[in-house]
Amino acid sequence: MSLTREPEKVMPTGDELALVRTAFSRSPTLANRKRLVRMLLLDDQQDQVRSLLDEAADRSFADEVALAAAWLAAEHEHGDKLAVAAAGRALSLAQDDQARSEALALSGKAMARLGDRKGARAALEAALALDPANKDACKRLAAIELSEGRGDALLQLTDRLGGLGAAHARLFGARVLAHARLGNLAEAKREAGDPHFHSARELPPPPGWDDIGAFNDALAAELLTHPAMRNDRYGSASNFTQRVEAPSRPDRPAVRALVGQILATIHERIAELDPADSDWFDACPERAFLRTWCVITDSDGFEGWHVHQFGWLSGVYYVRVPESISRGNSNAGCLAFGLPEDLAGREGAKRYGEKLVRPQEGLMVTFPSHAYHRTYPHETGEKRICFAFDVRPLD
Image (cartoon, rainbow, N blue to C red; front, top):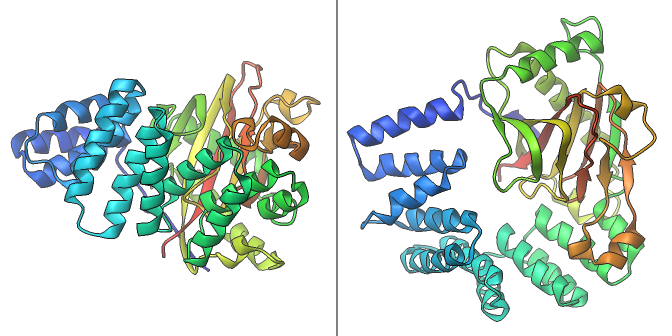
């Protein structure tokens, strides 16, 4: 695998947004509007996207897609109806099958929210017929099949999509859920790669630091004062947390050193993997980049059940862990692998079980990106700091 670092962002999103906003006000071209919409969505200012695009008479395919996403973020019935309309206009403007699939997936998501399961199913199936690798369409259609208890149908769907070349976290995760629904627990665990493809190891301090404690102190200081610090990001699994997106910068030497350590450790980890009989392993990308972010939780912060749909391999490095977590005997502050009840079913999730990983400062954990996981609140009054990452395919 050729694995590279993600490009460093010197300017925080808020500052970049201010510059793009100024550029658009001085020159309201379509290109500047597109840049502004993208930055507003990144900054969770969906209300401004709706205001900006609702007034535009010359909306493009990308504009209609952004408007549909912005209305979905409103999370109310009227917004969902407007999202269906925007997705329909995007479909009429699409120039290729991948774009048509994207519009149909948005429409299917909105219709599912509105309770139109038949319409949602038709839109999502059409999206996958046009682009079998559409992650969102796979996710939404899998949820419908699971809610109807159609585990066998979901396995057939994932087999068909896999036969057409699809190989991503949503597809592999759907197979885990389908097997759990059907009571095939051994097969569900095998598909999730647990424990074969999970790993936990302590990292040594990088060059320039005498011990891991001193290194983690420097890391914590850089992350807690990072100019890109923000609260929960819409659409993420984070709840009551602070986040730093793309934390690597020229003025953060400890963060840059950690990224180097993670890259080296991932190469070691991949070399250790036994291919076994795994579609996930077979999907190892030839070219990928390392996407990184930081999550900081106080007492009530946690991550809900999720997978990393854009990754192949994911992981976390623990920078700061309150002693009551690292030496505790409860699930407080722990990382847990298991399955969400709303998708696997209460009985399926219970029988599948939950495996806890107790965070320790200096510990790096890796796992397949499609493995469902969550974290628990810790109620300590102290900060828990972790540095998360995805190996994201470039091809």
